[in-house]
Image (cartoon, rainbow, N blue to C red; front, side, top):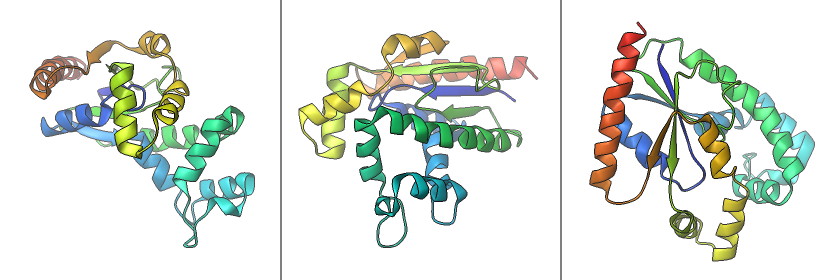
Length: 200
């Protein structure tokens, strides 16, 4: 089973890159989507979160107030660590289950907080998407309709570029035109297809 980890800090363009790979027939697994599924009502993880943060973290329908929780853990690093220690093992376990089904091509697994390979032994390669910080801040402002200071604070909570680079096998600079990005994705795709075939 050939698996490529896709990572990068917030607003680097991971989703755009993942979409381009999907258009080439690559099967995607999104760790953030799994995290959302694990924290829906009646899930054990949500019960633990309520126990830790209190019922005020829920809306009137019993669903997690994700924006409120995100804001809280951004301001309290220890709380963020607690949440990561709860969810990350569950996410890894789910991914391990999903990749047991043979893919048509290979799996690309989007893991935003991939800063160590030791917890993801099944990854054959890690692709890091990088963007200029100024562009990331601009994207955060547009996405969240927030201030420059708020966007800067969010970006500063992310792992540093050297930390990401330390785990990366391939680096994709997300700058320039979409056409240029598509060309670089296609080249990487051909490389991964060859690698996947060679490992059979």
